[in-house]
Image 1 (cartoon, rainbow, N blue to C red):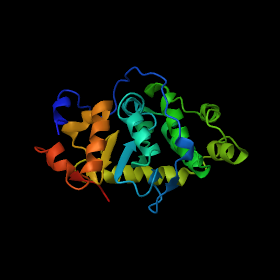
Image 2 (image 1 turned 120 degrees about the vertical axis):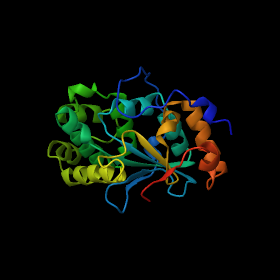
Image 3 (image 1 turned 45 degrees about the vertical axis):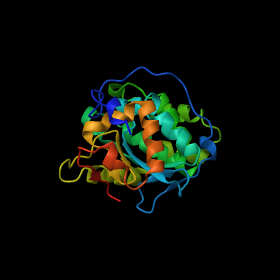
Image 4 (image 1 turned 90 degrees about the vertical axis):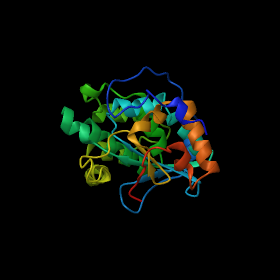
Amino acid sequence: MALTAALPGVALAGCGQRAGHGEGAYSGLEAVPEKLGADGTTITVGNPHAPVRVHLYEDPRCPVCEEFESTGGGPELREATVRGETRTEYTLASFLDDRLGGSGSKKAVNALRAALAEGRFAEYHQVLYRHQPEESEDGFTDDRLLELAERVDGLRSPAFDSAVKGMKYRAFVKASEKAYEDAGGSARPGGPGTPTAEINTIRIPADYNGVLFDAPVFSNLLREIRREPEDWQNYVFPDVATTPGPF
């Protein structure tokens, strides 16, 4: 596969400057199954029997996560998830609050967990990234999170509003951040960086992280993995030692 030829020079290490993006969206998320995993932190969206599993590590305030979700591989991933070809898993970090000050990441992760309880996580997740404030603004306040929830049919309710305002899922926020940090292993004890992706337990190597931000290349990668679900990393990343994920 001629995938690697498209990658040199586009690798990104983690949170940084935001790229411009449009307002495109993909319908169908409202019908996709979603659940909290047995570990209490992993949120899974999509067909549980899909042949491709993509595990994402994201912080709601991270502008590079927003770039992935808006103009990178995120739209391609959502389409594949809606079609039942891929299931997407999320570990939600909130370290940027400590790094930048404020509480927007923690509040957003709590609100996303509240949306999961209402069966609306995937839709709300997309809305939050489409309307992400500038990283330095700490703009995910209670009022803003509730305002954005109005954009998801059926999400606003007394139970959801109370969960957002009262930080009902504070324990989940803390556990999810710890899961993110643990995923960094001994090499990166603070966490693997955001966004990080693992596909069928194989973490995308840092040198190839640019695949996440090239929509056609990422779409092609998912297609090739469906064709070769066991050995894909051997010919996609032939010269790089891949890192198994924590699964």
